[in-house]
Amino acid sequence: MKYYFIYLGRLDQWIHIPLPDDASRVAILEVFFKKSSAVKDIDMNYFVDQTEGLSSGILIKICQKAHLIAKTEATKIESTDEQEQLTLIKTEHFIKANKFAGFKS
Image 1 (cartoon, rainbow, N blue to C red):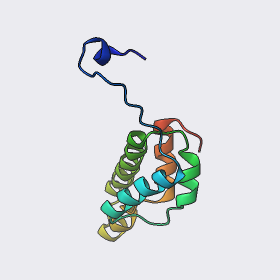
Image 2: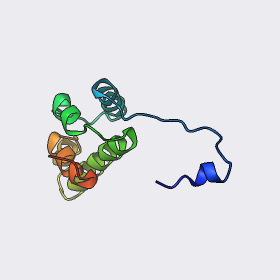
Image 3: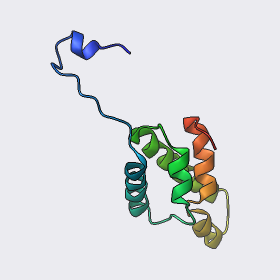
């Protein structure tokens, strides 16, 4: 890793921010789920296990990607009732989003 900011004198201290532990990843997922009212049948323990070693930023991107996948699938359906059902973010959308980050699925 290049330390450009330290070399340029922009930061005079090195601050280490560790990766989130299990409890922190659960909290991050819960914050996302509260913001998104369209979440259904999500197994939190599965995602906590699958996201070990990922930063909180990547975890948020996975959640956003899963939401985008759900909306994209919903737009392919013509019926309004079916669109509302498909807009729900499900476990399968997170599994598809897992490929985005490249972690085990």
